Amino acid sequence: MTKEIIGSIELNRIYQMDCRDGMKLIPNGSVDLVVTSPPYNIGKEYEKKQPLEAYVYWMMQIIDECVRLISDNGSIVFQVGNYVNDGAVYPLDCILFPEFAKRGLIPRNRIVWTFGHGLHCTKRFSGRYETALWFTKTDDYVFNLDAVRVPQKYPNKKHYKGDRKGELSGNPLGKNPSDVWEISNVKHNHPEKTDHPCQFPLDFANRIILSLSNEGGVVLDPFMGSGTTAVGAVAHQRKFIGFETEPKYIEIANKRLDSIFHPESSIPEKR
Ligand SMILES: C[S@@+](CC[C@H](N)C(=O)[O-])C[C@H]1O[C@@H](n2cnc3c(N)ncnc32)[C@H](O)[C@@H]1O
Image (spheres, protein in one colour):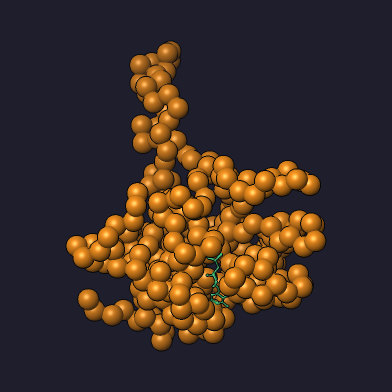
């Protein structure tokens, strides 16, 4: 396969690098979609908890680069949960939203991702959702709704009167999936589970990639983790750019990618 390069970055490769350094190597406007889930500053094995102000300052630098990198019809999807400190719960999307808005991005959806499993809290209601903020740079943006429609509740329902009597009343391709997505999170028994502690599910990445980018487009995940964004991009004929600081996660991601690039010689994910 011939290598494709933009700036000094090779496409379809995960670089072991701090994304703040890596993103500097990509030319302005050369990314069609950023989809990412950054660390939430909650002390996971891959992050050092820092004061909230310092975390937000770090995120501002990442957001600045994302804004510079997306094309005029591109999108940014930032998936986050809560920052929790001494029992106080701060929703990161609320804290980060103004940073995107200040930079002139246009908010399109605040997607609520709900899942059935998580910690059982005793001093507050158990958290069963996270969110994804979707922003575009302009009003001329990619949105392939037909690629992500979901089955209608009553697919055979027909108009019972008027000019269209007898015709299907809903779109036969399915309905808009709405801004509430019920998708299992990747816990121990999930078929996609790897040794990464915080993967997002492929169904989640796929829906974003299919709807907000076109075939051949470039998808960037600055916090690549176990490679879910990369797997979703390649499986749907997009190209990816990825950064990740931890070599052990890059190894996991590359194994997942191998099963797509070389399906004949690898063991498939347990689906
Ligand atoms: C929430 S996880 C992303 C998980 C990913 N969405 C997946 O499905 O596997 C965040 C990742 O960012 C990585 N990370 C933390 N700081 C980083 C940095 N400065 N540059 C690049 N990656 C970083 C962590 O090692 C971790 O794997």
